[in-house]
Picture 1 (tube, rainbow, N blue to C red):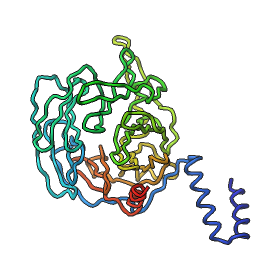
Picture 2: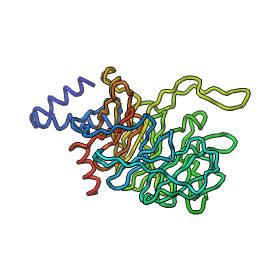
Picture 3: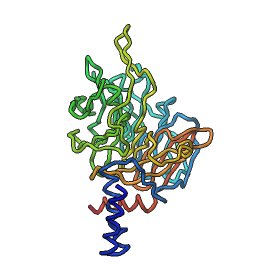
Picture 4: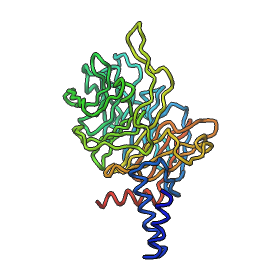
Length: 362
């Protein structure tokens, strides 16, 4: 390979000079990055930088969504309380959700915000509440039979869910209609490799600007892009080379259930999306990277959903004695990350702003 490049360089020097060499080598490196996948990240200076921080009461917050200039956080330990902060992370307002019924055996209720509505659900109890952000009063919208382990709001009526196939427990993606309560599964979306449960687990997000649902597998270098009806539009790959989930699955003889026999190698820890840009918190170190940096920062890789290509990477730094980023959310101006007991804002610099502006013009 090296001799080929050297010969090519000599020929171009004779023909076009040093400017031609730089141009050809640039296109050669881009082609290699996208097609040969040597797993070399492109850390882009000034892609994103920390500009604000606000303290939270404890370590159990997660970002539930956004409405205009307001970011909403919910809490795993107090599921009916919502904290509203402005996008500058200067002010905060506490809200308490009131429900019309409390007689369901919830185990782990979650909140999702999709303005002007909020939703409360616990997939282990097939009930979903819906209410308006103006008063935080929720009513039962769905009281059905479909259990689910994940959900993302597509519009005021449709919710993308991850359920499980009866009998096998394999994961399925589907649409839950919040008005009729009807569920339609799309079994063709998730691709089974081993057990169909752990190997198809992943994160779910939605791009309002692109009108696309995105599912990123935890344990392999793949993601799925679908439209509002959950019809497949594309299958993409992340920059690492883990195409098959590396899992040790153990079956429990007494119950017939399965579990992970060893900690899995998590390829994609979390994800968020805005417009055509997919942001993935990666769990895999690339070539030539420094282990010491990974000990003090989380790596975020950025992809173009339209072209299914990798674009760039940047760091979100840990908080000393508080650990790494637990969840994050992107909008048109920044990434908001929960780290320890605080919310951090990483504003986009020119490289990412240019990518977002370019997508708006297309």
